[in-house]
Image 1 (cartoon, rainbow, N blue to C red):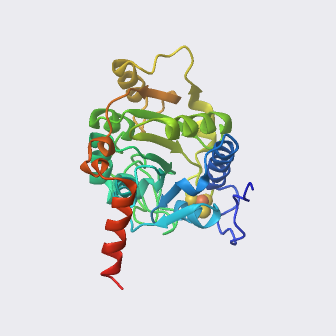
Image 2 (cartoon, rainbow, N blue to C red):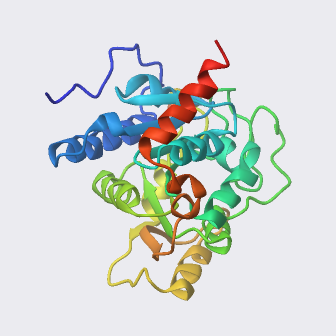
Length: 282
Ligand code: SF4
């Protein structure tokens, strides 16, 4: 039976929030996976702390709320304990690029087979508008009433430098492209990183600026690392410049979970070991 993927939990996102686009795009991708024979019992969604994290309440699949900045270590643990699972991480830009930055870099370095979707609204929305690592210079918010005095960093360039084997950028107003990169990211074997430019309707609404600057990659070869670096540097998350959307980079390498010794164990051995550990906690 095809399950309803939207829960009945009361949705508290602000009207116009880009989280709705990500939720419904992910739902469409999950629907497609189920229709093509994948059991959604084998899919786990991990979210962090922030507005984005409520997606775990609103999508009807196995899910885990992690601590702030700790989505990736939780997802890594889930994948290593049961490599059969498809593990999807949703994290905010604060979660991924501030509190969880070290985990992000090492997930890319290790090429752990999980998919990370960063809801990058470039502001802390849940705490009512503080700047994050990707807020532009001069951003005015609750913690910086006179404007930030530091430049943002470029997370896409950072992920390329750290060894991510799938790197893409989406935008919450370009839904078919967003669906395409999320589908590709989940299908990719290895660490899939998708930075999604998300509208925060209440504290940092960049709709007009993004609409004027984004373009979809066409006739582009995502196997070229040099081309990916060039595209990543075209826009530094600060200056006014064209913003490429789509798959910037893709390559195949052995994954961390394939190399991890747990693979030498059978499924039964793993489950017995997990039961023993859980038994000591009762
Ligand atoms: Fe969305 Fe921003 Fe409202 Fe949070 S504060 S729900 S990110 S619009």
